[in-house]
Length: 407
Figure 1 (cartoon, rainbow, N blue to C red):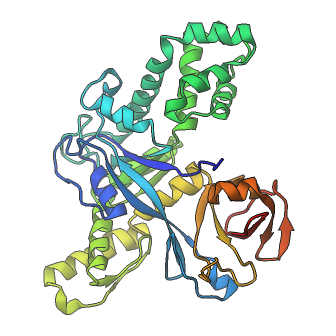
Figure 2 (tube, rainbow, N blue to C red):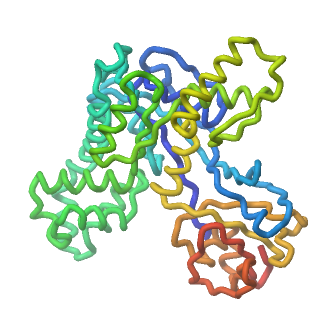
Figure 3 (spheres, rainbow, N blue to C red):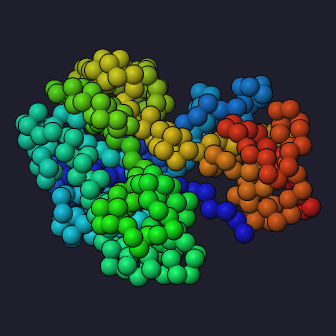
């Protein structure tokens, strides 16, 4: 059976923080962007890209990408992003668009939390003077909302589940995995949450209410890892707030979604040369731009790229997949000598797979028949044969040999 490896990234946050602008900048999708709460009523889905150095320069070949893109020696691997309706305090109780928000979170494997780093958006998502609101409150309330939502899912049936787990000796993780299957929560996440909460795994019925909440909060952190994106980094107070948030131990990336969106649209119109994640851009046709447009681009260069190193959008997506979700990139080929598929395309595909994926598991990811009929794999770098349990490394180029075909 083919293994599931695709991961969905949810873009979350309260209204009016630039959440939809981030989504649009990452995907170039057309969505409603406005300065009022609940602009996003239904979740928007789109395709963004993880950016990683391509392997073709190392092998001194010119690649022919099929399932991805290669620009300036960077491989852009498509990933699915969803822009989820804005959240306000009390969402877990159904306030605002809470029910819809939380239902979409079920499908997300990791979350990017967009905050207004300038403190110019209050807790309800309404505009205020920059500095009037503390964005740390936004981080705390969103984490609480997701934890409380998960608590409500488990709380009612918890006594019965805990007693049953003790009686039938199958373990609490076995019973909770069935209950939480719709949230994408796996048995290993449950066991890890119990360990981190320092609880007795064999006696869940003895856990106190405080123990139960601590377990669920750890489960939320493990099963729905969260990256904070400090948007509007060029506004007053933003950088100071970022430094305060870093001291609390959060993973945070500074960003300007508006700047990235402007650069992506200018590049799409062939006005500038720019690849998402670059620290620089080049104006190609200044004669096609007005003075105001050139000045706006130069402000982005000075205030965002030079000051911040990048717009932060690509860095956020990369961090979510490579660090939060612990993914690696693997290139399958059919002919390991020429690095081609059966159509003679060179390095046509790049797959994002979980770190720890074995050669046979990778075969299943490509096609179930390859996994079922797996014989061995070949590492194209050193031409070694590797067995089914060999754990693949990032940027491996692998040919799979089966009783039916090679890929």
